Amino acid sequence: MPTEQKAAVLADLTGRFSRMQLTIVSDYRGMTVAEMNEMRRKMRESGAETVVAKNTLIRMAARATNHEMLEPLLAGPTALMFAYDDVARVAKELEAYLKGNPKLTVRGGLLGASLLEADALDKVSKMPSREAVIAQILGGIQSPVAGLVSVINQPVAGVVGVVNAVATGITGVLQARIAQLQAES
Image (tube, rainbow, N blue to C red; front, side):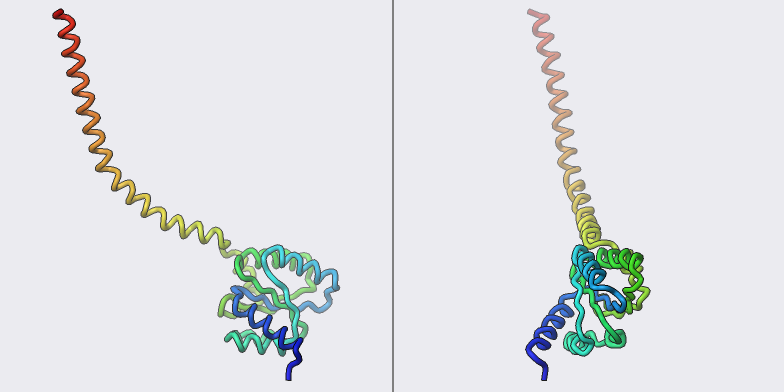
């Protein structure tokens, strides 16, 4: 029977697994408290949350959210990084941190419902950011609309051109007639 504290941790992990877009599973053996705090801070700045929990509770939360494919990665001390929005930014930040701190080792993770190998972090970090994807989508939507507006404006522009030419022609004829009348007077 789980204690209230374990039940709270399980509920927290289940909520995180259900919201996450990326989960990175890592081993933090050999890291000092200061190094762990630094890693947590860097992950938080990039939009990720770091959680250290018992593997049994992680397994239970993973099963509850249909992420049981994560279970083979759960051996030894485990730290999880959860990213909810900008997956590429979190992966880039973690890669940068790993270069300066080899004590933290990535075992793998989840990208949505897909299991990631330990070396897949590099591929994830090269994905476009959330803002870049939104800009691409908006650009794709805007382009046909701009073309449609241009097509609609062409007949109107043609009519305006004809009216302008007629007006210019009439103005020229009127000015010539006025000049002729003034010359006769």
